[in-house]
Image 1 (cartoon, helix red, strand yellow):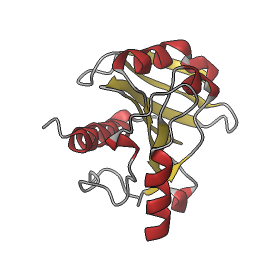
Image 2: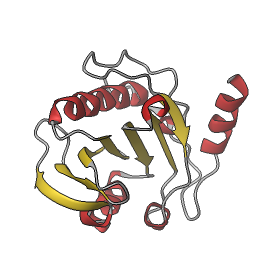
Image 3: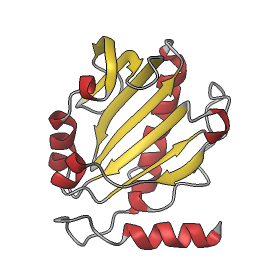
Image 4: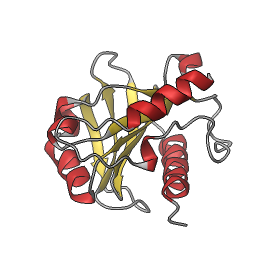
Length: 175
């Protein structure tokens, strides 16, 4: 586990194509979580990293890190895509419509209480066709998305998104 954490930290120092050489503290390993998960989240989350999307690379993304729940088939997930600037994170959010990510969107609205720009939505997974709830927002230089599959109630998704926002604040030492 320690060698994995060292590898993730080392990879975070390598900028994506066209990105600046400045590493972000947000690219550091996210496990163990900095604060306890909300009681509404009944699963254990594990850290992961993955390749930036073509869209994130086009906006000079530095890294994509997250937490998910492999024990239940990855139903609960938080993803942080980190960019060199707030403007690039906003550009990345604006460049991809949620309808390109999800099969159908049944509702989309502003996510109250989260940094703007943001949205909350309910829809269905493109591959599974099962319900999904999502809260996505830009906070500083990070595009944050908290989503839960097989749920149509927002209470758990909002709790997960608030937790992600609090941890982001701790990681960037803004509070």
